[in-house]
Length: 105
Image 1: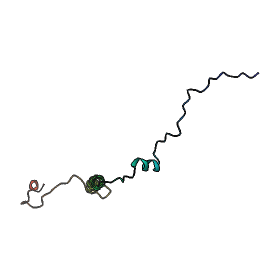
Image 2: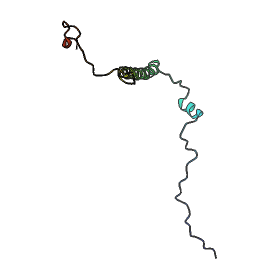
Image 3: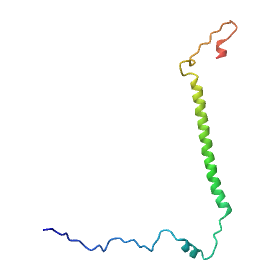
Image 4: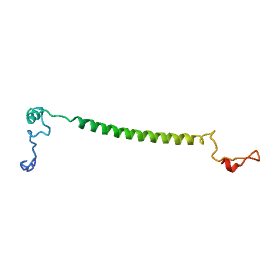
């Protein structure tokens, strides 16, 4: 025999209300406006766009300065690296008696 399980009616089950939409339709927005035309402030749109643009410019300038410093450091250290690199420790040997090696360094 097949045993059947006992179930309660799903009275507490959640049912979403179909008429409750999260976003208003075009006609609902037109009805809410009642013929009024939304006026956009000319200052509001330009200031937000300009502030975002200046922020991007600042970030770009900082990034470029950082890359410039990095490239300068790499090019300065590149002289000393490699097979034919210059030695970091140098000796100044005076070949004439009138030359002061301490003054040169």
